[in-house]
Image (cartoon, rainbow over all chains, first blue to last red; front, side, top):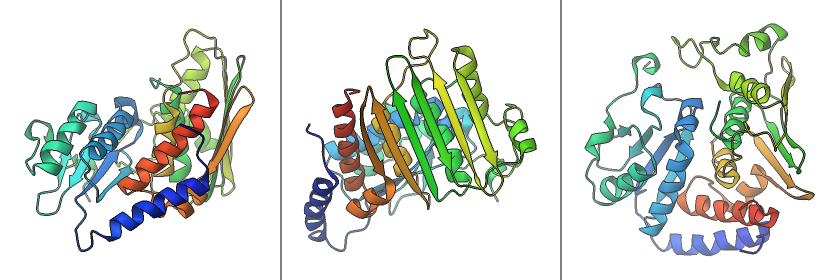
Length: 129
Length: 181
């Protein structure tokens, strides 16, 4: 890959935006929040981040946002990831390595079925207000 | 200790986000003999007393997590330097900012691997903080610089999948030019 300039980046983005405006009225397919505190980083949250990006792109799942947050208070089950899909319960998944991240994209986001063996239903008590 | 230097750097830059810094610079300079990392912010800083306490892994200000008794970010920094024959320094002043300098010997056998900086840079740029982050990475004289403000200007919402994908390609192309990928 040749070194990309900011100008090229802007042009690429503009061409993608044209594609996006053609799909109007659709809700965001999913929001993914990755726990990226000291604990998440140490447990491999960046591998999960890369796997989400790669799997979402390979299945052409478009309207998705990936954000990050600090420690969710579940350090024992890092990397933790919250997944919000319209019409489905908000779920916090634990022990999300690259493989589990790919399963979440295929099973939760695309097939609308929960990845039950990695679910944590709520954060630890010390962060619930 | 973090498994990679990129993990350590990510953790330390996040401290600047949490210190409400509006301007953060991350400067990484690699040569065959030296690996230099400088993280500087204009965030809320720490008093000399707090800074001393923050070096203790069993200290936390308790603001983020009420009952938590550990804070490992800075202890990981000093541990990495101490166990690999490097040096780490923090200078901080309340309401002015904090600067961390880490100087490491790339040939030390105990040094953790560097890690994937493209992913580290993408996660830092898209962490969702209000200020600006400017990254400069140089390897044996070759370098590139990029800032969050100019990326947001080119891409718009940095957190949607299209932006993240383009951003990663962009950073990867810069890293490839440095010969790190």
